Image 1 (cartoon, rainbow, N blue to C red):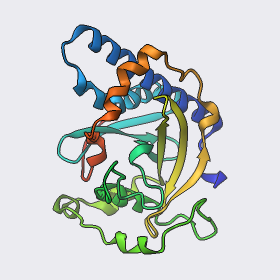
Image 2: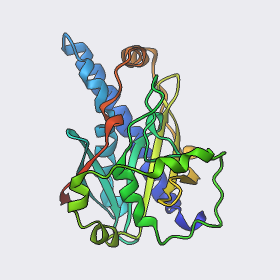
Image 3: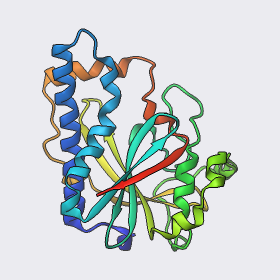
Image 4: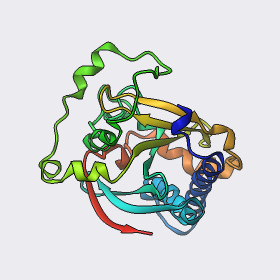
Length: 246
């Protein structure tokens, strides 16, 4: 999978941006906690902070980015590398199922929502050679049945072939938040539309630095982990494109 890796210096910048974006989110949570009577809704904004930080360093990476909408209300950013035409997204590993990437993992649920747009985006990779690559985990035999995804009408109306021809590859980067509420792992995947597996390209965790939290920061963030409310980002079952921003 080495041919699909980002340049090491670019990977390091992206990882640093993910960590710094998460720290911006924590600082924002601290400020809201101190100045507002109630601020629990800010718990679901960390994805925006992380993506915004990557957008801020996009000039150093020759990236463009554009806003897209997941589901009915959830906005996020798609990033496009100018030279290689690689499109990539940033996802929370807590809801990402590498053995069936188009279906989200939802805590305390037997089955998550199907992320149809991820499967459609993965078709960018249809011409890539996956046959010699082996996944680094045991792929469940029944998962092929889950590939019969419902495609919303808005997808049918889109010119998906034209969209896919605009990019050479589609990648997903995930960040994992551990029991200490710190970013402990960042993985780089290449999704295969044929078997719905997200193949591991590289573990980028070695670039993580400055992710440690204080006890005060953990106390502010911890309560959200103890309730049954699911991050709205886990329900991203559709996509709408917006104008490109450089």
